[in-house]
Length: 438
Image (cartoon, rainbow, N blue to C red):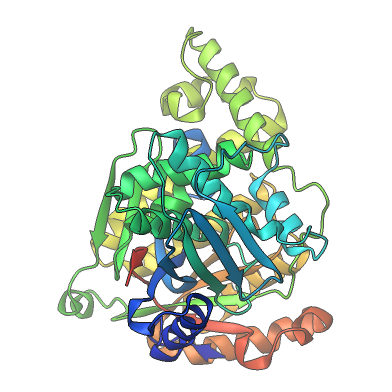
């Protein structure tokens, strides 16, 4: 059970600076590093694409991209995870991919080992595309080396958004572009939705770009309004018999690829849209966009009986999850972390029963976490077909809980559990900061 210390550590930064120093033949002091953290979504699963309200925070693990601006328009990148070297020019016109895939299907392709040589460079090309498409002039490339936290590249922690954000920040730094975090949320959306053709919302990149240590980031995905919600002081927690401190458990399943060839994410998005259309038309509204955030709760209650079973489940998940986010933000603000944890578990249950996602190993991990000592709540990281589950745990019981989860999972999934090193099967981590250049 590994407890994640301060990230990035000095040895990690020094290693990346050494690599770039040799690649570019420059002093280490000239090397910049983009720190682009992974994110978790305690509440607000699968509703961002419907304009719902979500909550998120980053963790102290993620993507590190060391770089120096090049003396020309050339981009040269190497990776700690993939072989080969990506070379391109920032003045090349990048064309969007023609195939529409879900984020998880795309990431599965990237991590399958069947990808073309240097196919991992698509996110660098996507970043150039996003910046070009909004009229930014790029004249300088970068010489870079990108690396992700060990064992977490297919974990449901949104490594794809972290990679996209990292390339954006590096290219912007090299070209002296002053871009706000909210603008970069849009740029990363362009990478994923337009360039790569993925149907996903903006929660991932919003969390990565807006989070702050110890805060819960809450965003309305329709209006793009957001706020950072701080926890109350420890004294107030003591008086209310709430946990004084919490940690985040990441329980790895050992699954790097989805157990199903068709997770059906695009289908679920379409089902949400269809349920919205039926509910809106039932209320006499034929003009509003068919997304569930345009359906008032009272309209849903009045007409939900008109939805066939699958559509009814998707709508129920949306409206119940949106309400859980509201209640969760209130609980977090008041220091009622036990209530916050219960809502996380309810979210996990709705993802399984109403949104109908999750594979057997991940569902088992979710149920094990619910039984672990000190765990206040648990849910999938991502959709639960691969990767890991998160647990919201009392800090003083985190080590005991991690040991319990590892031993119990070994009983249910001995083959998968044996593929993970013992000290990394369940990670203990904390909230992190937003993406930045150091």
